[in-house]
Length: 157
Ligand SMILES: [Fe+2]
Image 1 (cartoon, rainbow, N blue to C red):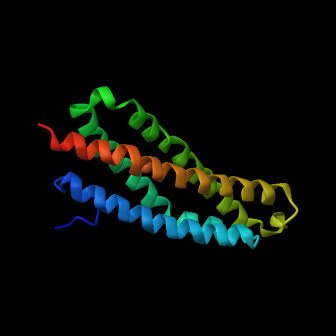
Image 2: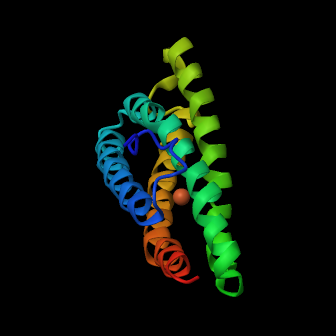
Image 3: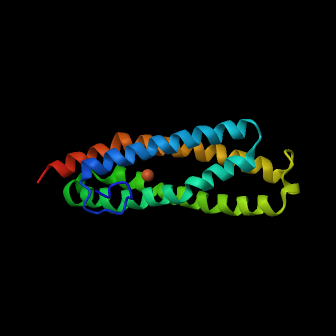
């Protein structure tokens, strides 16, 4: 019953989708914390929270591509185009997480360059805000399009 590790390829699809949804809930609670920090100009803390869920988000995305898309491509290929587009959004998610890591490392080494009127600071704030909005939208699209299609496809022979 090692269903919570995300490494169990025997986990039934309906159960996996419930787990992915509950991971979305956890990520959403972190996104709210990120937004609160950004509002208070605590960019470094916001970046730190993103960093703390970065590996988990990556693993989550890899699983969606590996297992859900496999079901869709096998059993609902003619309806797959929107889901493929949504899965491609993982590219910017991963890119952002990498650039966030760079920002985070830089912020740790030169905290002086992070005064609230510096360009780096303003850019980071804007980028993090956009990331939160886009990631939230991405989760919604998955729950409205990818997850239901996977469940429907999985239920057919
Ligand atoms: Fe995703």
